[in-house]
Length: 212
Image (cartoon, rainbow, N blue to C red; front, side, top):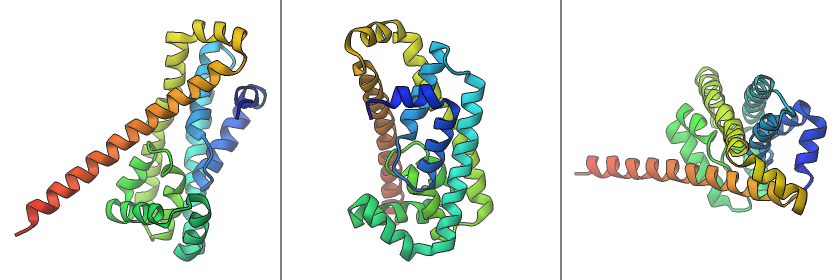
């Protein structure tokens, strides 16, 4: 999406709201990239930090709640049919279901930080019958941490390397934005992988400890 900076720059807070809501409803959209890019645009003076954080928080919570109630309304069968189209591999959906079923509200919180899982966390929680109150608490707490981190990552890139990025932009057009997006998404994926790997290791150790 090479026109992503122009898209956010033109539509501003509306672009953030729409992409983040849809990315939490169950569509695989690059919401972490949008939030990081918004943080970079805050550094540039194009957007206001307080408004970006507020819009990000509201859209993340609203989108996840819509996804949750869609999961409750249409159930696991419809969810599996949809996920098979989006994910492609049934084992990925089974792994997500097992993670949410085993960890409950904690899985909803952790999924905020894992690209590729986050967009299905709400629908899966609803389809698996997670109660509304624990889901809402995990949803809000996750958004309170995730949104400032994602926006802050983009702002930090601007603060540390913004002058070089802008110079590169004048020379090579959209190249610097693509590098920025790849770097931020890669960092978030690495963090998510480490979280999941740590949880699996702890679960495996606990299971072996209970074995006779």
